[in-house]
Amino acid sequence: MSVDRTELLALSALEKLEIIEMLWDDLGSADREIPLPDWVDQEVVRRREELIANPEIGLTHEEVWSRIGSKY
Image 1 (cartoon, rainbow, N blue to C red):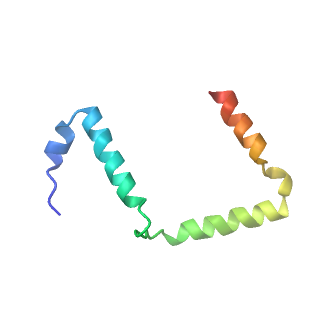
Image 2: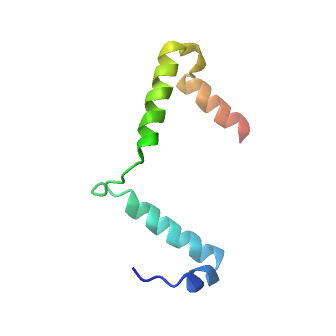
């Protein structure tokens, strides 16, 4: 892969955002599998076990959306 870092850094903020959006959309395509490091799976397991042991620490969908709505 050959990308000129100097050229990328010289782009306007809007141009950079357009490139980011294009790359993000490409990564999200259904046929693309993104490998995750082992620590991600370990963290998911840890959080799931914590939630099972202490269900009161979790939030309902309504509580989550309420918190989001109150911030904006």
